[in-house]
Image 1 (cartoon, one colour):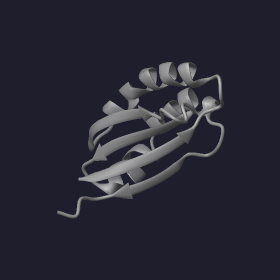
Image 2: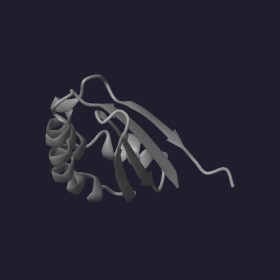
Image 3: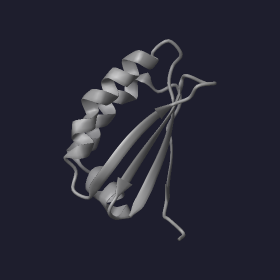
Length: 96
């Protein structure tokens, strides 16, 4: 299992619109081969900071299966307009 951690800085004042767009876009994630689960969090001290945690069965499920698909293009069209900066994305695995 691979955990994708994506950090988003959202344009201030557009947080609720981003949240609504993300809810619409989740079906695109859930329909992707290798997708296991997703969870979006929002900062308390910095409410325009969101962190998306997605579990994939393999790294390639995300980097090839999703990122190189039409689902990603559609997903980005829904959520991308609210980004104040490019997302920061990293992948991690469990150590124990």
